[in-house]
Structure formats: structure tokens, C-alpha cells
Length: 300
Image 1 (cartoon, rainbow, N blue to C red):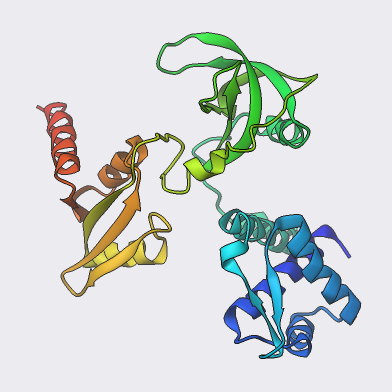
Image 2: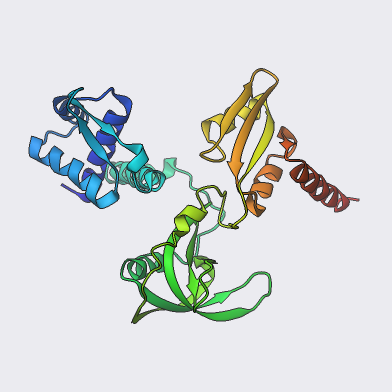
């Protein structure tokens, strides 16, 4: 069985357990069979174990209800794992379609805004993170227009809006820094290792943040009002996992976010133009107003 097939089975197992009410082992097996996987009970059991041990996704058995459930409270990196499954399954579907018909690409249109640079660095950086290897590279700064050399202790790879970033610490500084892979040059994975700070978890920095610009400030309640039409898009693809609907009628969709405000939040609000209005906090209302005024001056 190919890697794609294994990942597909993982997806179906999680899908069945998540949607069902403590499905039994036989029900999971039948669900897999209905989707083209005629496999042994041992293989299914091994899949469940692999999902738990390799990805930290807790699938447990409830004897009272004679079925399986997902212990989300004790799952590690739930969102990252589900996003990973989504990406791999989409790739598998496209690969299968292409192998069946070479003309498949005629009927698929990808975002042609440009090819992202730096993807060749993802694999070596991932290995460096796993093996606690110090890396060196040169990085170009868009703001200063200068290229500087860095020695980094890498902790995390993060993807945002089709761009990849490496997060780590420099020298003895314990504060995390973020670098875009599209501007990384001359990457070297050194033989020197480092001892990761067990108390430091960069992934947690982004739990309450939109994008890659994070801060150590307190998270705040942000309330946004969208037009009813735009609200349909916001409901189908939430701005953040904390998104909660306050009002949903023919006039507006009003949502509440609990996030640490940053540059990307403001940019996200501005991107929606006249279809959104900031209700609170007041300081964010003023900031968006000033930005819009500055933008308007560009056209005078």
C-alpha cells in the first residue's frame, strides 16, 4: 500500500470516529470497506496505534459505549495534523486523476501569482529541527534592503498564505525570531547540536495569533461586523479558530475573535474593504480609520 493510501485510511478512520457516536471496530472496518479499503482487523488496529504514537492524535476506546472516540483535550497539534491530512489527500486525488488522464491539468487552474521560492529548504530544515541541529544561512530583509548572516537554533516550520517560515532562536537570545524561506540563501545544516528549551514552545505563540507576526501581549476580544453576503464566506472559512458568531441575520454577520492583535489581523480586516466594520476594541477602530484615510490620500 502506498503512503498516500495509508494517509487516506488515517483520514477515513478519523472522519468516521469524529462524525459517529462512538463507532465500534466493525463499523470503522465497514466504513473503510465502503471507501475501497478491504484490509485486516490487524491493519486497522495498527493504523489507530500509528495515528496515536506518530502524530499524537488520541483515539481511545470507551468500554461502556463499546466504541471509539477522539480525546481532543489531550491531542497534540490537532489542527496541524488535520491540515496535513487535507493537503496529502488533495495531492493524492490530483495524482490519481493525472495518472488516469494526462489531460487532467487542462481542467485545473492553480494560483499563478508566482512560484514560491525556498521550498527546497523545507526538508533539510525539518531534519535539523528533529535532530536539534544548528543551522546557518544568509537572509534578505525587505525593510532594510540588506542581507545578513545568521546562526539559528530551529524549533518550528510554519506555513501561512502559501509561504513558509522558520522560527528559532539566535545565539543566547531566548526570544523567537521568524524568517521567510523565500529569502534564505546558502543554508547549511551544521553538525553542531543544541539542547532545546523544554519550556519554550513556539507553536503556542501562534495559537492566538493570525499569521506569523506574534507578540507576547495579552489576547483581546475583537468584534467584527460583515455584510450578510460576505458573512457566508466568513462562516465557511473562519478567520481564526476562536471565531464565534454573535449575530447572524439578513443584515449582518457579527463575529467575535479572541486573538493577540498584530499586523496581519489589521491587513485581514482591510482586505475585506467595505464589507466589514470593526465594532471593538476602540483602538483598533481608530487604527483602521487612520489607515483608510492614508490610503484615500493616495488617490487625491
